[in-house]
Image (cartoon, rainbow, N blue to C red; front, top):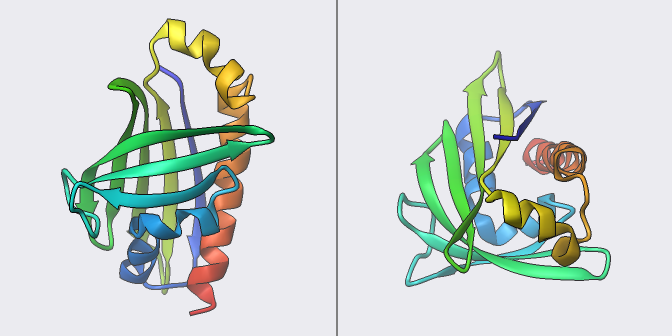
Length: 152
């Protein structure tokens, strides 16, 4: 199973950072690929079982997915599974560890696509090397998250 992790030290309280990253309606501010997210099914915030829809873009390619929160531990961990028409796509995790006056955030992506979907995904997303692409976008996501968290 393919996976990518990146981390960033953020000079902000872990609970504040968690509040930013778990507010999926703001994900478009951090991510260079996700343009927006909205809670669905009556959900209004991150809780295990809450679902949201994510809209994504890479060049002229656009697609959306349905996500379900699998971990919502304030100040420590936020994670969700991504599905497309009931097919597992990915798991995204944000682990937040206290770190001497701030925190260290680790963003982790785990590929959950079946082999056949991995082969055809580039046609829909325009991304041929998902691991390399995600490492770059995750690094940018955490950098943007750090700037927002540290600016108060």
